[in-house]
Length: 105
Image (cartoon, rainbow, N blue to C red; front, side, top):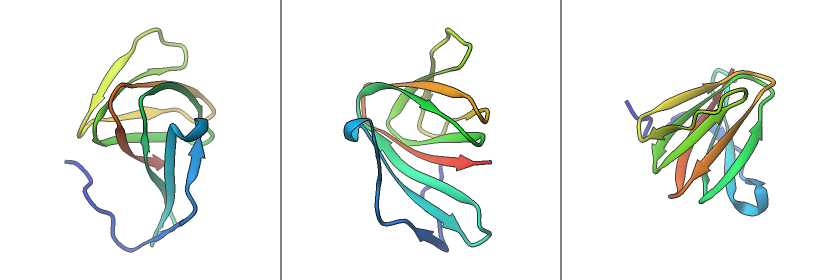
């Protein structure tokens, strides 16, 4: 099931802008205190580092990702999720705009 809306949240109005604007997100905090980001990645190949574990949920578009230590690119489309361990990294390759929710923890 695709997450189409998130209710009862506080939104950080200033965007997080990475890689010269190729990735833009906004932080949200849910009523229970958990945090997520909602954003887009424009066409590019980028490498992200993680602190906490993350789950990336595709809500529009598509991407390919490669986890640290792997040589395999895996496609992620609308409705897919993939997990990244904490204190790790992943590469993401986007050919069409990729809209996502990043779930932390």
